[in-house]
Amino acid sequence: MRLRRRTGRSRRRRSVLLALLVAIALADTATLAGAAVLHVRRLERASGTNAVTAPEVVAERREGPFTATIDYAALFSADGHQVSSEVRWADDWFFQDATEYNHDLAHTCAVLSAVANAESAYYQQGSSAPAYAEQAFAELGFEEVSTASYRYRSEVLDEVLGVVDGTDVVAYTLATRHVTNSETGEERLLTVVVVRGSYGSEWLSNARIESAEDATGDGDHLGFTLAAEEIVADLEERAAELDPSVERSYLFCGHSRGAAVASLLASYVDDVPALASAEDVRAYGFATPNCTSSTEARSARYDNIFNVLNPSDVVTSLPPAAWGYDRYGQDVWLPGEGDASLAALLPRMRAAYLETMGVACPADPSDRSVVGELAERLADAAPSLEALASPLTWPDVAAALMDADLPGLLSSHYPNTYIAWLEATDAGDLTFS
Image (cartoon, rainbow, N blue to C red; front, side, top):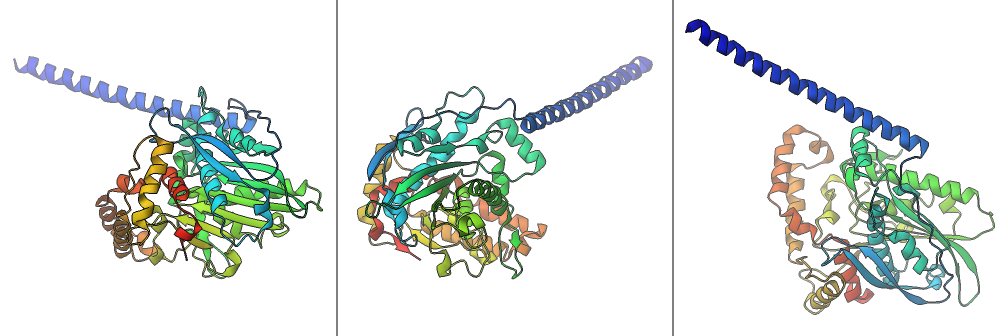
């Protein structure tokens, strides 16, 4: 009996050991297989193969002020996620003072920023999603539209590769058209860059808060800076191919991460030859996070940058100002809790949201106080960026975040919440700081 029992135990041990060895072998095989897949994808990127190609959309020239209906995909809408917004367009906008806020242009930029997010689905293998960006700019009469940066940046495999390689990339739509001053007949080449918001592995870029410092010690958020620099290289290459006598204007816009990158692009006017030689540069960002530690961020030189902000949007308070972070340009605050105009404007906003999305707007203006408290708690848990780097502060930071209803707070961050607010208001309803 004893021998038989001992033999049974030995057999069980051998079985467990064998199972463990098989599990290790399978894990190693899966790891090797995964590494091989990623390596193949790198080769495909290098050779420009196995990716969705850009569509060809022919646009007709449109003159004078007009309205256009823009289609795009929106999460949390009623059926099918496709929605439409009517926007205005006028060439004359780009012959006016870039430091003067333009509410109609802001609304158009907010819709285009949502379109930039929706474009990602087109670049996924097997997707039947329309090329929203190309169609939108065709509706606006643009002559050229490029979404080449979405290739290899919209597939799940590419996002995995982004995590593995730790790269900071960016997807953006670049479109051009000639605009004409209706009074003088003056013509310029307008270049619009709409930057996609955080997508997939790009969320990691948001955490790269450390500054890309200059000689004075001021600096911009590193993750956003690396993304902006890629776009700058594209703009410089395109500008070099133009006739130097061609007058140019630039418009940058985006939502969330896209807004931060757009504002950085506009802040580079003095440092980038393509922008420094332009007649006009402006930026409209929505839900813009803090993105710079520059003490000059609020100086008049950046008054061509507008950050449209929802007081109930937690992203606009991050990284905390207590860590020395701010935004470039002018903050344009939508109505919020405590504002005298909220009672009259909130029903209009909710109606605009319902008309576009087909569902009730989940954003709650009373979250304004919650956002303020969360920012204070984060600052208390980690009083500085250096303190955040210490593992000793991480439990307190995690506790501050876990105590907050982040999914609920993020409803105030949605692109269509911003679009609805802009449709329900005019410039006189907003607060500038």
